[in-house]
Length: 455
Image (cartoon, rainbow, N blue to C red):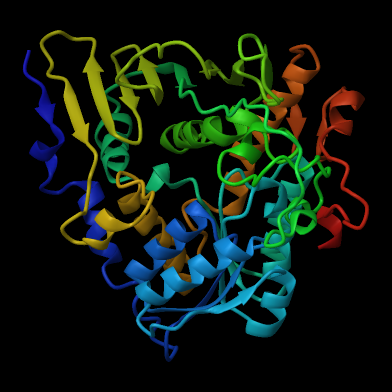
């Protein structure tokens, strides 16, 4: 049976229409003069990647960079100078609060580790900036509720880095398969990640180097004994700073499925798992976990393993949406529609790359070439929402639902796999005081946990 390729649908494609519609949106806010005044908080790998995508689609002046690692900060400043039109090295800061006070940026990108997202986002909103914050937006549920409250109170637009919903081939797949009803009645979804991405070493405790402010990097989180530079992968392996593989990878696929199927809060969340295989290192996040996000007549089932083989080598980090007339599989790299009717042709959707349009992508260190077009569209959508005073496609509330659902899955796992029903109106887990008590993580002395009523 022949497979019909995405390119056969290019004419009139919704993804191309989206690309065309964004055109110069980031380039000219008609009522302003000069470039957008932008700051980056967290100058590591993905923070810089997000910033460079914005530079590619908008007239930007990067006025400040912030990071507690002096070496990383200087390298980021030098790199930004080669990428922005002015050729200037931005002002460099160790403390983001000093950056916000002195530079007064209009737009702030947050690429810090997860445990800092909420405080940085809320402070940037209070300082008058629109915010682009990486996922997951928070490390506990109430942080996320406070971020929503702050965005609404200060009337600023917050775009969350769940850019799958700005991924061209997934936009096409949604419009051509989901929205046209090709799958029929949809009553089951599988989402997964089988990447071996769980750092699991045993480095020795050592003195903190002079160039790194480890106390500031740790911020509100517990202060672990210093055992090496935590960025890039090392911090992710500890629950003190994030929410494990579920918080890191499930949030993307759950968010994508919610967008495709127009789903809100799950009615119930259940999860089990733990450290079953990789027991020899310091890592304290699960290496194996299953979760069920329940909706009326629909279950979204998550599975991750950081060991062994993937269930499907073509889709090791992916979603699969099952209807009574067919199935749609999707990932950052591709999507495939498989009809139940043997007389109907499957449809394949290719990932869009833009190497020719943006040749600097090819030489940028550590860039995810497949994700770059999606992030550019995501940035343009953010700017369009600001210009039109509308909510962006990955508004903070949508990011919160996806993030909090993953956090609740972890809480369920920690509580032995019991079912949790979260009520966003009361901000409690219905009938479960113990689970409700876990919606706020304790902060380290000197830091105050944000509350939705006090932002």
